[in-house]
Image (tube, rainbow, N blue to C red; front, side):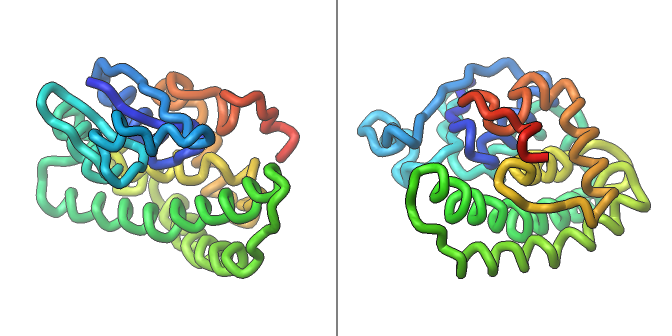
Length: 216
């Protein structure tokens, strides 16, 4: 199995972490978006959308991060995606909230503020303001949930949890303050200590030499 990723892509990180948590043997294939590698003919043959992540497992070529997460969890039969319908629905609920209301706006802040600042381009304050409002609407809900349970589905680690850890991973670097949400803060810090996290990176941006302690 090969998983194609970029180290600033939180959807990619979620897939890598899930593969690690599932105990699946795989090969990491870096697609450096900074160099436009996603637009090469070889990669476009894998994903015509020119996006990461992507996965190849035998004859199967799969794109879109949620599809990859579900495939990895089901392939491993580790409980990262439960077998019971009602529990699946609970995981699906939290997974969708994480992807649409945390991961997407944090990525917008990453791209339109942090990347813009680091590359000398103007910040899109309008996009950043909307993104911050979306994150701060979702975080109280997650904070309340994590006050009642260690995991989002209340029972055990699932792909919803791994997705949330990866979605939150950039916050210290890109300037999203989660200190008003202590349960979320503690949850992220615990996630960063897990073997499946440490197998993928030391912290968000470590691959390019960022010292994340500067941003805390």
